[in-house]
Image (cartoon, rainbow, N blue to C red; front, top):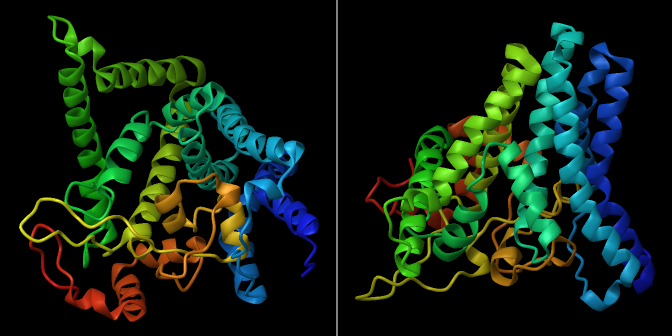
Length: 365
């Protein structure tokens, strides 16, 4: 590896552009048709984890804001924005023209779209943490398109505050399987957002006969119904079915990542108090596998994100964070088979065998 700081920074910027390759593969598949439409799937589920395994490269370098000039910073910022725009545009194109594709092509395009939109959630996550209006507008469009309009509410005002505690709907308890977690976290996140909105309106004194119109969850719900109606009118039933199936797949992938990132890593309560210890690197699972890291906007540096909340290109490794044995594109298939996941993860952190779920659940089996 070249030790020149400028070369390291330039190479880092180039690798951060790796998610854009998905749209090149998507376009090639649309142009060639048939089995070629599986290119994004093969890349993410076969090529990426295989390259991680063969190279053993680790995305564990540290960078400072001063390592990047104005142009590289603009490239890194627009990298996420462009992904969000292209993700919505790509899925919209197929949704509106689904009738022109064969059943084989629709199957591969559906799998590809779900995976690419799952990466799109990573882009939206980066955008919702950014302060600029364009970033906030793009995250609003992309999360509404992905049928998760309350993503910012649950992530910023609940997850980051209560991670690793009973109040966080996105923390997987020790011994909790992915399917029980999905059944709990999806409705639980919506319910939690309703509570957050009621608390916000009470604090701001927004009390009137039509106060429900000021509740963002009501606005989100009405907006999603209208959006589905628009999709149906423009794309018909087949287009709507493709669109809905695609975002359901993306949600399963997103929640699988959420499940992985904090599985069993609970913050200890302070004695005789309802408060908990501060969030630390040990409360998130990290994964620095090179290709999996860069193709997901470095999502695997999750502990550093919780501690410092920096931009994706500045996230750094944390020595105290527990490490996943594989990248996300092999970890997700593992969690979908709960006995395999539990067998693998308990060997990484034996102390988990003594942990208990906040509501008094049983030890890890």
